[in-house]
Length: 529
Image (cartoon, rainbow, N blue to C red; front, side, top):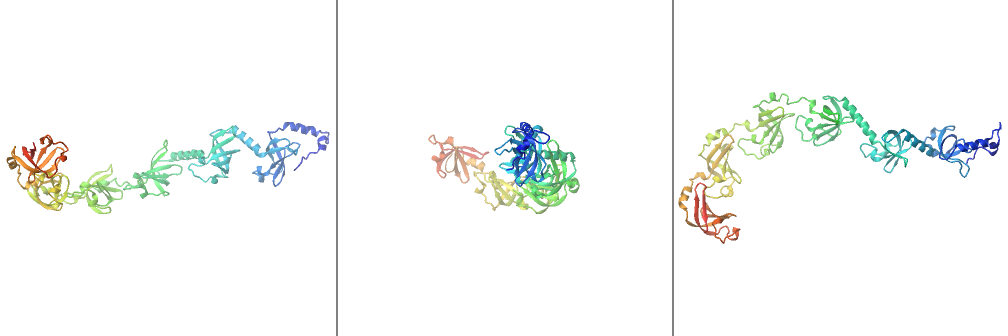
């Protein structure tokens, strides 16, 4: 241990008659524990520094309290905190670290407040964040270290950066700072500077930052702009990824921007001339065009006439005669087809096309080829709940409604009398040339039997028949081949109660009496009473 360099003899008398003991006593009165004073470095070893503070003894400070030890030399002055004026060895106890902490805290309290920006250097990693030297140690939470976590906190250590003071706790003498809030302000400043320089219609370069279903976000260096899918190409695009990928460098046109909301609209297709400008000259109405099927939807198909120009062929414009349920029945993506321009909306950028118009309309001849009342032959093409479609010559389809299949038989489905693919004869009932409909009849091949049936089945006549159908309102009874009558529930004995299936079943023979014959409605009413 290094002892005092002042002996007892020196403290009694010196040359010139100065009383040094009195001087030391006065010095001891001016230095108190807890005070900060100046000290001079008088010795540097491998482990410690000896500091003279003008007291009767020197103080010793470990070298690890001097992060800048390599720059210090004998004779330099430093600030130290007096902890004790004398320890068990008669030495003064001083601290450089504690002096700096107190001075740093006072400096911050005198010069900074919450919300101020302060410079500092991250020194070490701790649980939940970093310690930053801003004159004293402040805590930087990991969540406040960057704009977009996560971040490698070690990458900040040793860097001189600006931080925002977000919390000062005077009681605990600690400070919480944020790097994130400083970065946010810098980003906002860059955004404002960029917006001030922007002009509508100018070309700017950027990088594709993100892609969504509705477009792509382009980073312009401080602010992002939206390139909407509709502004990527004059042609059809199903998804932005067909045109761009994340990381692509692109040049785009500034379409619009709002300084208040900081939103920028960008365009890619606007770098090229709008192909719709002279569309009416290139594709006049009535002209024949050729193109490729690029998309098929339930209601039609889109034909690409040139890059950026597509026309729609509605499903109703695919064929004069064929009943098409979906365009894929006659078209496929990639097919090259011819079509006629039917209409055009230049403002809405829409072209209506027709494929069937390439051929003459066969319906123009139907009215003369198939006059009302004439007999025709055809093949059963399709059966539905309401009737049967019959294919005639020239691919013309006619409909036999279920009500025109039999004069007397009550049918639930056309399949009771017709089969798909069967060749039959029918009568032309009507021709609707405008709506391209041809009505046919099967029962009209023979005369209406009802005038005779009215005479044959007079009211009061008793008959025997078989039950063909049971409903909640009565029984249908076949009284002759393909001839049925209805026994309404009100015309049954009093002991018959619903459900009728408890009393009757299909095929039962019953005796009935004719109570009504309606020639216009072609109905026969029967009674079991």
